Image 1 (cartoon, rainbow, N blue to C red):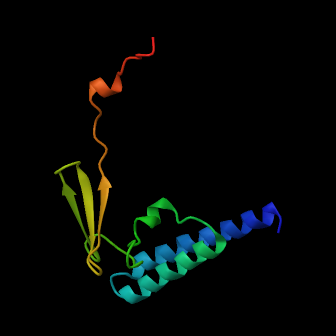
Image 2 (cartoon, rainbow, N blue to C red):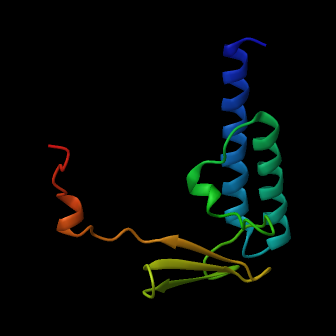
Length: 118
């Protein structure tokens, strides 16, 4: 296979992955099992074509049980101010917790560190 054919295959795979995630988000309220199946198929396509899941869809997949997580339906989202401020996402199916750090402001001392190599 030459590079053009590989690029074409990856482009087709990405289109199919995006479409499957759109379908999964449409049917998740009525048929959650079907939505999970769409996500499973999308992940398999990504692995077979050696394509990364787009970042907007990667967060919609539970890292432990590999099912679709939608805030309010299949996961709980909380803001945690303790320690480092972060977002805690809890999958309601398997109970796993994911923490996404919230980037805060840097202090002025760290931002303007003088050069000491003089």
